[in-house]
Image 1 (tube, each protein chain N blue to C red):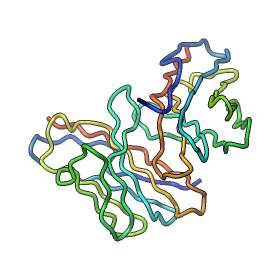
Image 2: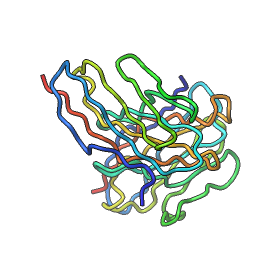
Image 3: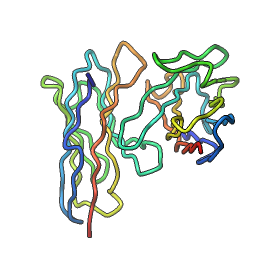
Image 4: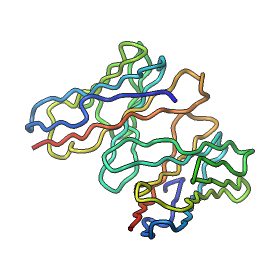
Length: 112
Length: 117
């Protein structure tokens, strides 16, 4: 069973609107949680990195939150743009292993 | 941030041939490099971990004789898909760690699309 579950699997939003992606994880103990953006046919690009003691981290129009007690994270995209169309992947790094645990990703499509 | 490159970005080959993919860390020394495979609409799956100057560690189910990994220097790792078959067609992504300078962050390459005819 995957230790990192993302929802929804995909979503479509209109340009300018906001959206929130969810990530639930069971990895424990964990060192940090990251959100990546992966454009089609490209490698993942880091958006935010949060340690277990951080609750929120922003990168421009992207804001990630983390609740280490409930093992949940979210990524909020504000004022979406067409270029935000991509897959967003939640990745958890265990504190006792170098191997990363990847979520399956949420595919976001922004339409004009 | 640290930059990782891959070459080629895409390759098409005939069944039975071998293909080599390069992964380079451009502005840092990568003590550890990772190779992932990603099928359409799926997440990245770790294939193997390579440390400079030592043998790669393969994940369960990954054939070491089919996916040859060489990490000969601190800036270069190669993945050779030997006797490729259509089922090996996939998106191969490498990542690199900088030995702890940036914590345990892995920097990903842009990926290589392999199509085996």
